[in-house]
Length: 316
Image (cartoon, rainbow, N blue to C red; front, top):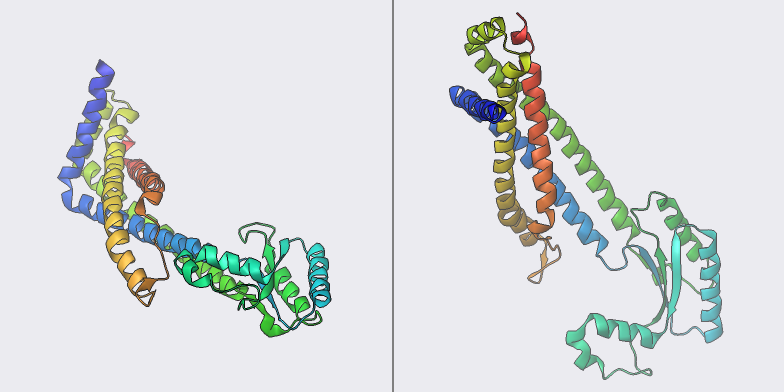
């Protein structure tokens, strides 16, 4: 029963400490919220770009369209040469040959709204060419080497009856977007470190102000036998409360920023014929990660800053 009373006493003292220095406490919350919000926004934007990129057709594929004038023997030889190249490279997952009719059927399945119009095409007047599709392993595979992709493309151009205009790929696009996302990730990490340090400094000053105003009380408590942990706990709780309040505010603002600001910017500035080319994942997909992430940052900042700021006041 006594432990429960002590616990609530510490909680109450933590809130009292915040109310005594409301201006500095508010500044601490604002800086910490800014830290969480910037990092969270960077993460959400980067992840959505990555998801949209991975869903792009043929992003991890090189497609070779087969000219209609090639004979069956020539097509067979081309496919054999492609399979031979496949065996020499570790990153190539598979190579498949699709006839003209198979490609037409695939196109029908991908465009069900056009199926009624596509029934007029048959084997004789099919406008789609035959093709060979070479699929790579996932770009997120740690053993993946982009150089092998370009090496394969160069060797494909050397195959007889295959011309440069017959080879289609989006590898360069992936390479550029990956470079951009890596840069944004580094910027987000640097900003996290800088803002977190600023947050620690502001929270430390907030705690120090509270301890300075109570320095005589703390000294008296030490003289009458109060333990360091008993004196320290309310100030650590004060730092934790500031961190948790910041996490709650940041989460609410992140919800608004994502659904009403980022969504408008990305979808309105990336539309073609009224259709958005970027589809944002629902905020619910990130809810758990953001909650734990913001709570972790807030708890860490609160505990570390308060622990560092109270050392000298406990020396008697």
